[in-house]
Length: 286
Ligand SMILES: [Cu+2]
Image 1 (cartoon, rainbow, N blue to C red):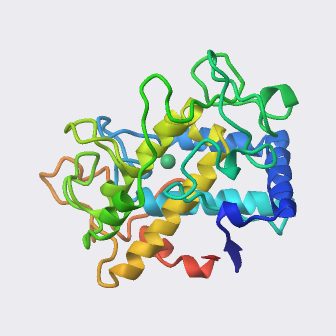
Image 2 (tube, rainbow, N blue to C red):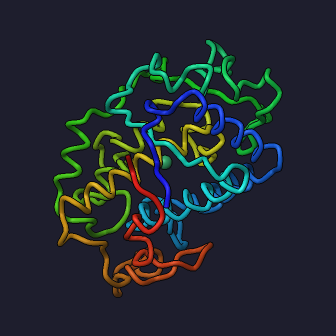
């Protein structure tokens, strides 16, 4: 049992240890395996394949297990480290301490959006991204998306999602118009709703965070730890709610063989959502 802290409450020493552990995982090649895994499971609902990670009810449990695996890798390097969370409803500007030189470094420069400051700047020699579609190996960010500005979601927007008593609804994908899961995951492309909460944060950061190689930017872990924390808050607010669907949707639903019911085992770990509902077996949020 260990704690996950708000990143704004990390001490200097804790930031240093986290950064060191990230850099050591990168050097060993382990870090890039996690980027590849995220790309591999980034299946969209336009594809006729199993969909454990995105546009799907198992968005929360899949990412919980994914973060746990990553955290175990970090802790193999330094047992005192855990993944902090970034509450972007509060730390919502490019001048938040998150983006300082002692943690994640700052915004990308104009032009190629290359991050020039902090431990993950290409020029420091310790961070090559692996998931990009171009040959560029530098970490890029475009905080606020300069060409087509976008704002981080507000507490009000998050609270609206948290107040939905239903976990997820048919058709269990990116066009589910109600339900906590897609209100937080935030797909809005196909039915002209604005991109919301989780997805809007990926857009706001830009660079690799805007695509399937998003874990190439270490802020990914802090963002998804906050998603995980929001899931715990929703569970607490709606004790009778629970994960849905209880079973795979039955025929003729086209998503029958693509989404995971509560006891269906998710790749690549072969664990079911039901085994991941209680985070207090692993860690606590403080
Ligand atoms: Cu994400």
